[in-house]
Image 1 (cartoon, rainbow, N blue to C red):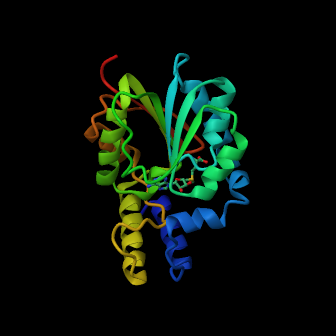
Image 2 (cartoon, protein in one colour):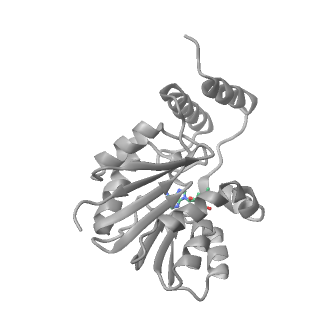
Image 3 (cartoon, rainbow, N blue to C red):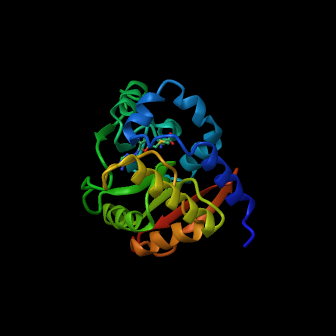
Length: 234
Ligand SMILES: C[S@@+](CC[C@H](N)C(=O)[O-])C[C@H]1O[C@@H](n2cnc3c(N)ncnc32)[C@H](O)[C@@H]1O
């Protein structure tokens, strides 16, 4: 079987880094906080676009995996008084977010979005940027169900995240992640920073499984899609 270039490039990178140990998710971000925002500036256009896509009348917003709040920087420029709940596993990232936006209507939650209860019919908008590409389709479907429940009827979920083009690349990433976790004795349930992106089709499928009606690709900037999924009703 001949493999895609995407597969070949990833396989080559795995071979080159085969001996690297798995890094715990929070420790990974803690260790990289100083150069983090410069590194993420590649996606600056995405952050602006996400802010533009939020409906004019949005009053309550949930940010899942907010980090230092690069998307919130743009969102607060456009919506000065919006009420934001921002959740992240890594406290050092949240500290930086609070330093930047201390005067805003901002609640930060240091926690796991798979475990946290977001409530029901609370938010007009939920966003998640570059955070969910570490998890399986099944785990994401469960989270999408919670996001859908937390949105008001007609509310929207905007996701911008890393995807792969081919299912074979998706499978390769999951199998390499499994190999490294087993080798390093990582207990089930511990999050490690290892990218396991889905294909766009599988990402949309997980959103539908989570109860979103018509998730749609809004645009694909520099290979990173922005997807909007709407809660029925409203
Ligand atoms: C690459 S950063 C993206 C941060 C921000 N959204 C941005 O675009 O700059 C991914 C963030 O997701 C957070 N994260 C990963 N898994 C999480 C989980 N299960 N619950 C909450 N936060 C999580 C990490 O701590 C990290 O801050």
